[in-house]
Length: 329
Image (cartoon, rainbow, N blue to C red):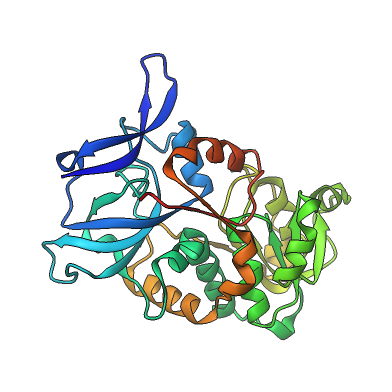
C-alpha cells in the first residue's frame, strides 16, 4: 500500500524543500497504531519545521505536522481498535517523529486521545494544538483564582491561532478581554469573537517603562513572549497570573522581581507537548462542550498539502489569522 505525504528534505547545501510525494507504507515510522489522517493543522511550530528554522527537525527526509485527527486503520494496542476516531497533539510528533502532513501516520498509542463524543474530526483540528494550549492556560489561571468578576484579561498575539481561540473561550466563560495585536486590520474580527478592548501592540510598547506599572489586568494569556511578556508582567494586578505559552516575539525575558515580590504575580509556563493523558482528556472534554464553532467559522481556512510551504512562510510573517486546516486526502 502507498500513502501521500508532504516530504520535507534538506539538500547538501542546506536548502530546505518540500513537495508532495507518494510513498510505500514501509516508509512509515515504527508505531503500534496506524491512522488514516483526515485533518491536520498549521501551527507556528509547523512553519518552523517546514522552513528548517529553530532546530526542531534533526533528521531528513521528514514529514511535519504536529497535530492531526483521523480514523484508526490498524492497531496492535488494545486501547484502540480499527474504526476509532482519534486526535494527536504534541509528543514531538511532526518534529522528531513523522507527523500529520500525510494521508497516513503511524504512532505510539500513548500519544493518542480518543475523539470526544459529539466532536467531528474537522472540529477537533479547528481547535487542535492551539485550542488545547488555550484551554490548558485557562484551566491553570482558574486553578489559581482567576475569575470573570476579577477584572480584565489580556490576550497577546490575539489574532493568531491560540490567541483567537483564547479570546473566544474567555468570552464564552464571561470574561472581559483586552486583545493585544500588531494587526489592526483584525480589530473587527476580535470584537466579534468577544474582545471588549483592542490594544495596538505599538501603543502598548510605547508606554514608558517602569519597574512596576499601573495594575491594569487581572491576568493574561501571553502567546508571544519577548519584550511584550516582560512589559505585561509589570501591569498585572495583585495576586494575578500570566500564562506564558509562545515565543514568536523572542525567547528573552527582561523583567525584575517587583511584580512577584510586591504584587504576588504568578508566571505560569504552559506546555502542551508533554501533557499527561488525564490532563489532555479533561481539556478536550471541556473544549468540546465550550467552543462555539459557528462563531469561529470565519476564522478557518482550508488548504491541501501542496499549499503548505507558501502558507508556512505567511504564518512566519504574521500574515495568517485564526486557524488553517490541512486536508491531506
